[in-house]
Length: 63
Image (cartoon, rainbow, N blue to C red):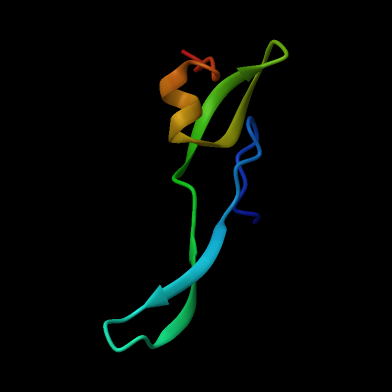
């Protein structure tokens, strides 16, 4: 399953971890995705959305 928000499309970011000795290794920062029941186009669905979309009100939660 893709690590991508269904509303805003936010996905993982990639970069390096750099130690004090300047050793580098690759890592990824995943978005904080939650599986919620939301109303999309008048239909209740389970969708994976990021917490920033939930907090900003872009997702209408199903009751």
